[in-house]
Length: 418
Picture 1 (cartoon, helix red, strand yellow):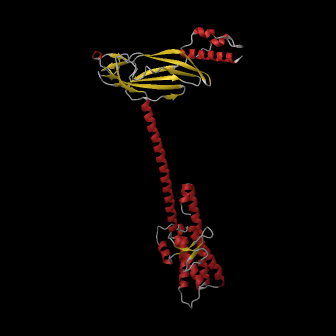
Picture 2 (tube, rainbow, N blue to C red; picture 1 turned 90 degrees about the horizontal axis):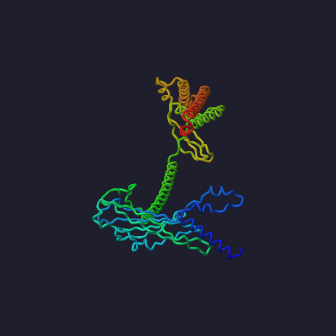
Picture 3 (cartoon, rainbow, N blue to C red; picture 1 turned 180 degrees about the vertical axis):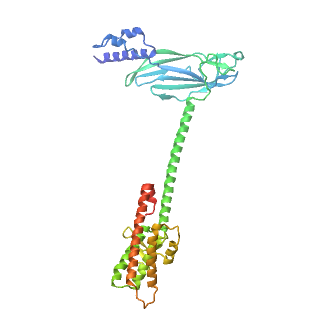
């Protein structure tokens, strides 16, 4: 097939497409379609062609009822087909504000908003400001006249050539407008007077973009302020932790006191000295303070430093970090006062009695006359009683922690004292 034959075939296909868009497909045209090779003719008849409206228009008024001489808006909106291969071109010369005829209504103004597109359709619109001056129309339905729109269907033959079809006519039916009434007699729905023209849509889109930009800016500002607030909170928390050092747990205090009592017991095998008696006495005071539920006095102890003034060193859990030096002013009289309390549980009395006797022994030995030698057996028994009570209190603390884990759950257990 030469180039001329191909051009004629393309023109024929374009004319057929224009004819299909111009109006519905007739039954005769459907019967004239030849059957495809290898496919029965009944299959072609079972698949009719689908009608595609090339243009569609509709009216919309700004008010449902008007008075004589009252200006109101009438909008004409049309949707035309526009694809890569077919383009519907309407003649808008008789639709302009200066050229449109809407008798008996008088056109006193109007505008043409910018076009908009959706899918394969291009929408264009005209807004006419009209009024009615006929006093005989009061109480009647006045019809906007039928509007004729002519158009052509242009088909793309090649990448740089189009073919314009013949001129077609689309008749826009009129619209009734009632004078001094809410709804026309022939109306099938209630038409609101909202301003929904293309210009209003563009204004709403612009406002929506402004709101989007503002919301993003506010969100970014909120995130920034949130980050700054979080940084300030973390900084204050770190400063508070630096100012307020957490107290040593009872378990570590009891472990340090037990270790001190064990050291005194080992070194006293070679003989008792005033330093060993004072160290044993200080350790028993700490154990008695824990048994009575009293707090101990703490001082910061640098890494590698030794405790002074009769204090017991409590080393840090993390090597290289500073520890604490603890002491207590609990005496045998304080333990005796606790034993005199009838509300004291029975299971605590045996341990308190042992601590009372041990404290009394060390107090008498420490403040006895210099010529009176220490009773090594009584001091050893006192040390042994203090070690047993420290071990018992430590195990009791572990059992309390375990019960808190089982009863309160992991989250509450983490906040409970160790």
